[in-house]
Figure 1 (tube, protein in one colour):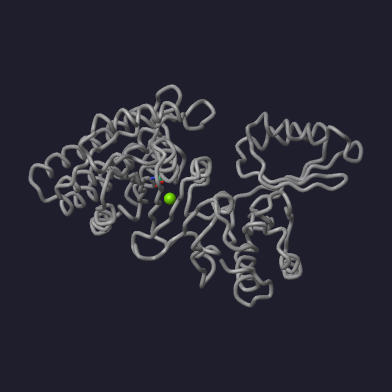
Figure 2 (cartoon, rainbow, N blue to C red; figure 1 turned 90 degrees about the vertical axis):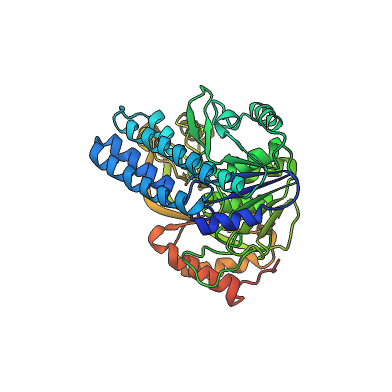
Length: 445
Ligand code: ASP
Ligand code: MG
């Protein structure tokens, strides 16, 4: 069975929803995971923030505005009178729940409940569109099978059992539609898989049903060799290995939620990235196969904080690093990059929720310096560190203001830490040196 996932732009207008309808009009049973229509989750975040800030009137205005856009979409999407009425009723009930939420006291649970509405709306509307076309469709409520455990990991056993049960109950359907992003927590409260989490929903489902392939459809033709938002003439990559894709997704390539690749790698299920706006483009196929060597792609991750920890007592005393890591572990803060010298260790984090407490504890035995507004630039390619041309990279980096380098931690990744203000220039220089001038040669895949 195939699992398809369509992102916010793909379901962001009536025209695009009709494109999606064509794409999934294939043979056999399939599962279709949808994001909220583009802009909706952001609008819901704004509404939730206004409620938190006790700005009830403004929150209501925002809700009414969003409601008006949905009214228009439903009008343009569903012509069948009965189905139209069903959808209007559903949309109205969601918006009246939202208006009621304004008068409730703010909590994280209220926030998560508000955010869930985007995917509930898009899937309801889209499933009725398919029904209007006479397709055999069933809507599987994600909140009845998608659950995470206390460690925020998917509860795979629960998911598989409940998903299979729901599919069995709707056995006559060819197309199963479900919501991306939203799930239950271990206590049964509504939560989500973090922003962009619909991709992850699709691969969790893909693993649960041991899908033939999972396809993630967005508005770009796959992973590019550099960030198209900052660099011109980037190129789509036709093939990546799971490891390469995981590193790129983690280190900033916005196309994929960072955890998406893992469930596929575990079961060796192909993951294909496709462009809804250009379905004939090859896209990126992610498998365990290795295509080419050397630097294949560059990505950047912002909002990085660097922490330099200098041992005050003695040169890297044994047990020093253990003490450092224990503090980060205690505050559940993961470390991205790390380099050490004889007397100091520098590391980076992207979650500064507990930074103050971490620094206080570190200062009991070390001198601590903090640099924020940093970015990690990540160069990815299979066995990149062994490639004979990679050393040339260090020559070209003379031109770049690098604060830290991580080389050798993984065979597939070289990470550079730069000031965010130097990011654009660094990405553009690397694009030129690595992919254009051939200053650093790369094997094309
Ligand atoms: N709608 C959610 C978001 O905007 C999840 C997703 O689109 O993947 O983050
Ligand atoms: Mg996304």
